[in-house]
Length: 269
Ligand SMILES: C[S@@+](CC[C@H](N)C(=O)[O-])C[C@H]1O[C@@H](n2cnc3c(N)ncnc32)[C@H](O)[C@@H]1O
Image 1 (cartoon, rainbow, N blue to C red):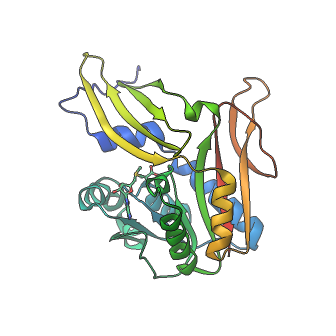
Image 2 (cartoon, rainbow, N blue to C red):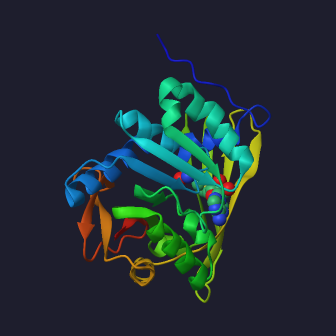
């Protein structure tokens, strides 16, 4: 039987739902985080803090992945935390007891000490000043356990500096990513997510991002300055048939000068 595709329109669509479908893949994130921690530390990670948690989708996936796992999601915005509680956490039933949503600032979180802390979807790029990013990395260092690991994602390549619009068709709607002008002097760039619907309606500027585009060496240097003993960069492999990224990230010392890439920068305590 043919699968019915939900019909979205600008009036009825929920921007958090569309965001999750368009840009998040928490199953792959949990696999990657678990693999790196196990390989480096020789044990399973139990606790995770998701900074800039938004709808806390990663927290939900984390506690589903192993019975003893516990997660904290930190975000400033009550509305998005409550959306996440209703749509991602409460439906977990008993497992929901192992998720803690914290309305707070990532710059000042201290407790509890966790095995893994993440700042994903480039959210730390809202910190434009070096001293503010350093303050955030110091807070992350302090709130990790003795052998904790901190994970950030990063995007770059020549196309990160281009004024461009890309789209991706998803069931029932189109995800549109628009990058505004990039300044080579400040490395700042504003971007937007728009959603377009089959009936011609649009959710324009559903999300706006005012980012400084940080580089791998800047992040690694700041992590060391914040106290991390070692930093690593994990780079995506290439599928030999499609020549596209294969979703498998391995440690690298040099990377590839692709026009558009996503990588992970990791700080080891
Ligand atoms: C792009 S969303 C990230 C959503 C999701 N975690 C992801 O990976 O796609 C960024 C979130 O960061 C939150 N945020 C911004 N500044 C913050 C701060 N200083 N402390 C905590 N949360 C913050 C915003 O409220 C927003 O929900």
